Length: 538
Image 1: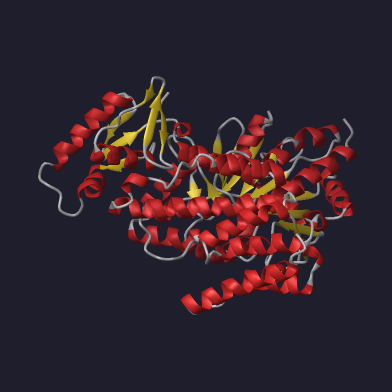
Image 2: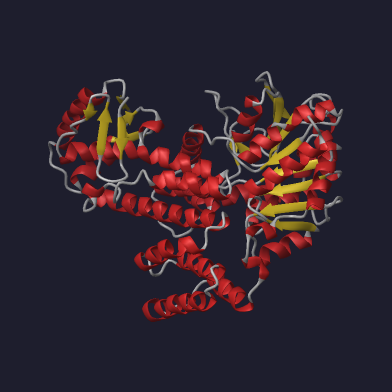
């Protein structure tokens, strides 16, 4: 199997060693196809990238010749013609960039030292500047900038994990080097300030802040961002929360309360969705011209300029690759057996994600489940559909009478409030609440709560809620709660778990009578799992 490398000079290596990839334009063609692996790249886009705005009349013929040569190297089944262009069909694991992304994804599911180890493994895949030989090519400029930003963000995530693991003094030298190489990167300066402070070097931590403040004011005429200003203030006040992260973990009594509600069948987890990468991929694919990173804004642009069809097709393609289950998904997938043994009702799990990660975790655990998913368009717009374990599906047209078909006494039910991906070829029940107009339509439907099957609506009114990774500061997500609960406070004590919260976020939750716990999700789930194990001995 051939291995392709983009994180540095372009390379390919097969069972017999390095593969000779040909001249500059043939190599550029391969790089372009690798960046869009398993997606069709149009002939027009390839010609424009390889020859610019004024291609020679022979450009089409030359492109075909390059394709023929690459097919000889890679195999006709690997590089295929697919109108309106070509498709490189390979296992993503063959590309170092995809392996890097998977390691980052796995790391997000871990805590402390384990997370740091995976992130270091990911960064070790980099052999230098990405796409180094194409750095002066116009088509590569955006890609190189995006990949460099991805690498630097991963470096910052690594320092987050290392600091979480308690490596403070030993990180200082490495952080100083990174801060010197990226003098205006505020997050790196924040890491350095924290490492210095925890190492007993408070004065140097404060001087680090003053240094970047001078640079920002002198070079850009701006002050440091709120996060860095707040960290500086917390160091000045010597806040206890700056010390070991263990102090931030919830008390055991909290876990006792959550486990009790869980085992009584009165806990509804609400799983938030991290859509940052999805937004970035859409923006890149459709050449989004704005500065916004919001999925709703980018999707609105695509729907208006290109139409909802291309938007949904690209969302389908991006989600088809699949997001692997996280520790959060696997934890809740492990609960049905425990609840059955105790005679408790199964879980109603609410999710705002579009992917099938939760469903995959349940399948891997050998559990049957029902899915109730919102329909955002078509003849059943504003309704939900019921996807049964046997693969059958039906719209829920009369929610108040739809009771016997769905029962938490039988199995887990997944309620997908934003619709989601349909893996079947027909894609009949695929639907996404994703654009600004989608959310405005959602907001305008005052009867969303009445569209939920009666048994589930009752469950939502009589349960504790555990919001995991659900950011109340995002207006589009608050729409969901507004439609389900209106202006009423929740009837049972509920909790929200996030890695970090801002004052505005805490105020939103306070108005909903929800307790906020500032803890990394992997840490929280691990502690919750331990408490459950103690409550239910093997």
